[in-house]
Image 1 (cartoon, rainbow, N blue to C red):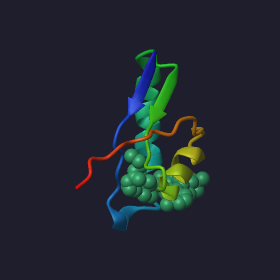
Image 2 (cartoon, protein in one colour):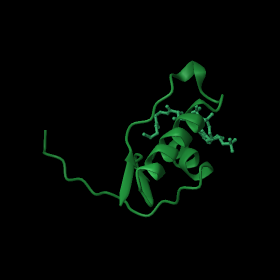
Image 3 (tube, rainbow, N blue to C red):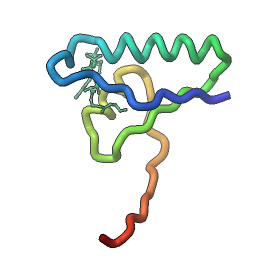
Image 4 (tube, helix red, strand yellow):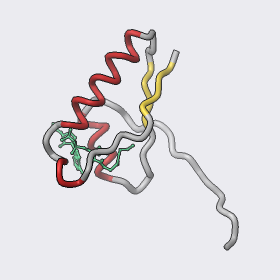
Length: 72
Ligand SMILES: CC(C)(COP(=O)(O)OP(=O)(O)OC[C@H]1O[C@@H](n2cnc3c(N)ncnc32)[C@H](O)[C@@H]1OP(=O)(O)O)[C@@H](O)C(=O)NCCC(=O)NCCS
């Protein structure tokens, strides 16, 4: 069973205070209790801050999504 953490945001002036870490840890605990073995979270491919955040919590990058946009 896999669980997903979708859209975790902290307002800019409260970042760097471990708020997202605590939110994510609470979500991870809840998902584990629900039986999730793998927990996934998406981040934009070029969002280095989000990559570092998930890596700091022990997540490993394993997929890149490709998108084909309509010509505008
Ligand atoms: C990414 C985000 C949620 C981090 O929130 P935050 O409350 O500042 O993060 P925390 O203070 O809990 O940081 C936890 C760890 O992640 C690391 N980290 C967080 N943001 C980072 C950044 N921009 N660059 C490098 N490392 C970062 C911290 O160094 C910290 O590691 P440490 O405890 O080992 O020092 C926040 O910057 C945000 O809302 N960004 C925009 C939305 C987004 O990208 N969400 C994630 C994808 S859905």
